[in-house]
Length: 196
Image (tube, rainbow, N blue to C red; front, side, top):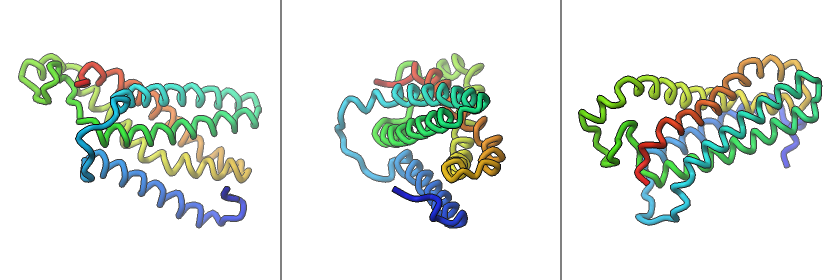
């Protein structure tokens, strides 16, 4: 176990930023299918998007309870809820990269699941697709942006640097909550078009 109190803040930041770059690189490499994957794989892989939505939704609930706990000055409960939300987020990242590595990309609006958007299919979703794209892109970009902020917030919390923790979580908390909520929304919007 890492004793965060023994590490300098500079070193911790280097670890956090390196971890963020590594996670983002892994997501891109696996999502772009740059590493060959087997032609067959366990069927449970197709359940991972639903699991991802469940993990995101559960994380959202934990984050809301965490806010309630700290507003009521229950620091221990706040800490436990945040650690639980963090664990769910780690499980989400593992499940997300696994799913996107194996499962072919799904096109929003592809009703017949042939991976080709016909003019009729495009017309069917033309009113809602811009909203989907905005939610999806904001979800992705903010997920990348919030990762180092969450990790640094955890460092400040675990080392009892309360003022720094409070200052940073004013930004990281609403972004993290937005990312978890929009993760569920993205799933609900794209799920009808899955080809499995």
